Length: 290
Image (cartoon, rainbow, N blue to C red; front, side, top):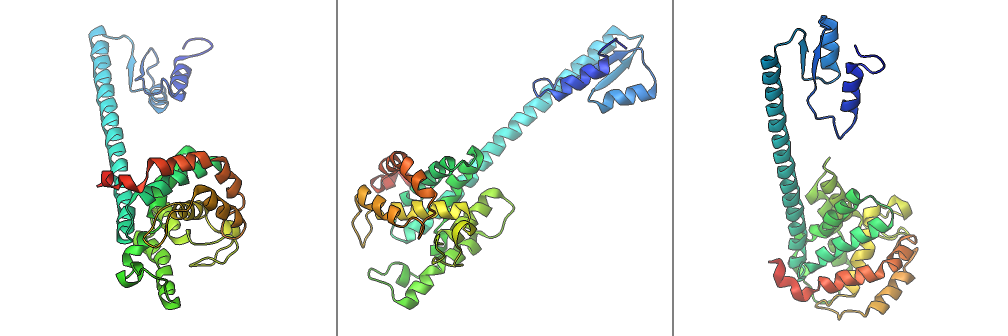
């Protein structure tokens, strides 16, 4: 019943401020009507004591509510810690599944890590928020998971593939998306999109859907440029690693054809970071991943 700002308004302001909203509020008041008490609880009070009061009872209720507050705080901290642990485990499982596909393709597994790091660098540079960029980091390594379903006779063939074999190989994009499945979970949904669209091309000549331009999701456009650049600059059973300059020239030449033309200057602006990713995650260190 204070003038200007009464107890109800004090409670409202405490509950509207993130810094104070969790502080337990107990009303001690001469207002004893049911409507007054109901309003106090409605705006966030944990208790309502009408005058005259008994000091021992008030102190006992304060202790009770502080104890409940501490229990809830500890429980929230435990849940938050467990959530972080589960998220980390989920990220690791997804990344390891992506690595499994690379091992089948005679790769070391470092390729998928480099793709993830490059994808986050490019996503942030394109204005993607940190949380979504982290999803790109952890989802893009799943881009080739569909290779698990491709026969060794095609996947491991040392020479050029026949048109029929090439057609089968191209099925890995659709197979990867099918393997991951459809999910409401952001990470898995983006991973499925990366698997499905990382071989689409800006001019519409890619596969499996022949998407064109911005119809290709950003994760697909980013993964495409990261995947090609890493493949060019890596040693493979059928080729030597290209020098950085030669690989960069090809990326530039494919602007507006294979790659999103808006991504090319972003790629060039962040080339130092991308090269650092390659150097820090070389295939020579693959044993560390086991």
